[in-house]
Length: 273
Image (cartoon, rainbow, N blue to C red):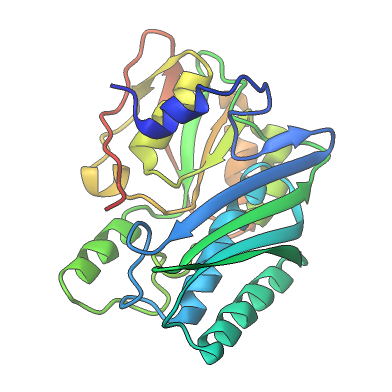
C-alpha cells in the first residue's frame, strides 16, 4: 500500500519533484522538517543539538545534489514554555551551523505551538547536479560511512539510556568533499534519510530497475534511518576512481548491489516513531 508521503507527492505534476531538491536552472531548492515527537524528543537533546541537527539534515539535501548551500529560510513553531534564553540558544546554533557551510539565513516565519517544530528551506547552487536518475544495468550501488549507529542510539534513547555527544543521531556527517570530487564518476546519488533499504528502493523506482545484492545487509544496517550518509550509483568502470577519492577524503565506502532489471527490492518500514 502506498504511504501517505508518496500519496501526497503524486498529487503534484511538477517535473521538478523527485530528487533531494528541485533543480531549476543552476539553483537547487530543498526543504525538510524536524518536528518534536516525530524526529526527536526534547528530553533527548539540548536546544543547541536540536537546531544544529535541523540545519545539518537540510544542508544534507544540497550536499546530496552536489550543490553549494547559499541561503536558508527557517520556520519555527515555538511552545509557550520556551524561554528567551532558549530561543537565543536556538538561533545561535542555527547561525553557527549555517556559517560552517557559508550559508546565510535570510528569513522565515515564527508561530506559536504546543511543541517545537522546525522547517528549513535551503537555496543552493550547482553547475553539475547529482540526481536520482541515470542508472543502467551493471552499475554498482554503494554507500558512504558506517550505517547502523543512528538506529542503535535511537533505541538506547527509547530505553532511557545516554548516548555519546558525537553520536550520528545528534551529529550527522555530511560528505560534501567526497561528492564534489567524485561527481564526474557518479551516475546517481541521494542522502540516506529513511534508511538504506527504503532509500535504495526509491532510487530503483526512479530508474524503473532492480538490483542483485553483492552481500547480505543486516536489518540493523539497512533500516537505520536519519544516517545522512550518501547512497551512490556508478558505472563499474569508475570503481577505481571512486575508491581513490574515498581514500583521499577519508570517506569509508561500501559496495552492496549491482543494478539488474530482473532484480529484487528491499522490504522496508518507516523508521520514524
